[in-house]
Length: 292
Image (cartoon, rainbow, N blue to C red; front, side):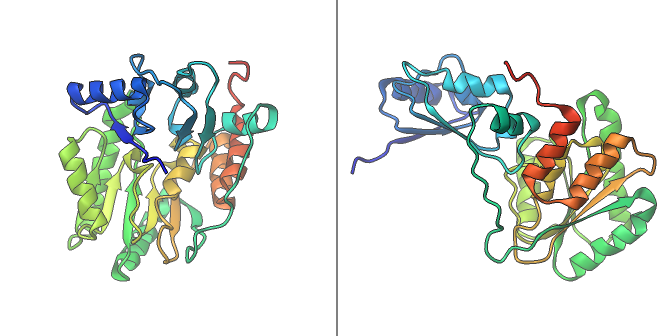
């Protein structure tokens, strides 16, 4: 059998290395390229693009995805999109568009269903006690805060205030903090510490939403859960339940919630099925521009 020549492409690569990959793709020497958003660039051409696989498809815009398969020479390539969190548009395309669906609806061997619950801010002491029990039994915990650009200063303060509260309540416990504004090496250091079990609590923004796999982390607390979208909540919940221990997702909210927020929280507590959650999201948000 013919050997498969692979390449990797990301925006952080040196210009000379990128040019080598571009040339190899254009000449058809590279059979398989794995990359980040860098693959959408205008100056990338393929000799004969036959298959496009997009993982975590909800993290890409519609136009971004279209840029990839429009790099065809003659025929459109086969396209496979993958996600644990179908967005409303994806669900609508399965109903009305040209998209076939395969659903993996069972958990990997040895995994347990994640128990999701909703708690108001006045139950914080009980939640802290639950965190303590989890750590005492050898588990680890994520505490996630929203970080929205328009109100980044306020949100960042919430994150750091939360971190200070946890350090006061757990003075003997190693606690890490992680957010998108940190330098790459600091982020990597904090993630490594958590993955190795040196820090027991990781206070974070949604930077942990994808690609984070710590089997020993069994509890995720999502602060101000009413400020997250359904697909984000479902994706964050997927950071736990990756080992054999029973895992828990606790959605913390203020008491006074809008009807939409109540619907989202109810959907999360009621189901772990990405398609059911996307269905609620579709009803609430609509499918986007179907003719686009």
